Image (cartoon, rainbow, N blue to C red; front, side, top):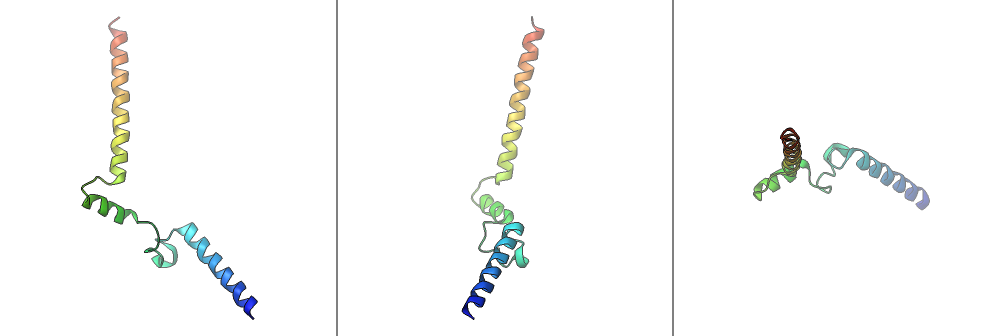
Length: 85
C-alpha cells in the first residue's frame, strides 16, 4: 500500500511540476503558485517605479534607441566625410 501511495505521490508531483514549467507559476492552476514564483511583470514594474527607476523594458528600449542613434550618427559622419572629398 505504501508503494502505491508513493507512486501516486510521485506522479502527482511530476504532473504539478510539468504544469508549472509549461504554464509558469502565474498561470498554472489559476495562479495558485503565483506567490511562490518569480515576480510577475506587473509587480516588478511597480517595485522599480517605486524605487525611482525606470522599468526594465524602458531601460532596454532606451539602450536600443541609443544604439540606433549612434549608428545613425556614424552613418551621417561617414556620408558627410565621403561627400566632402
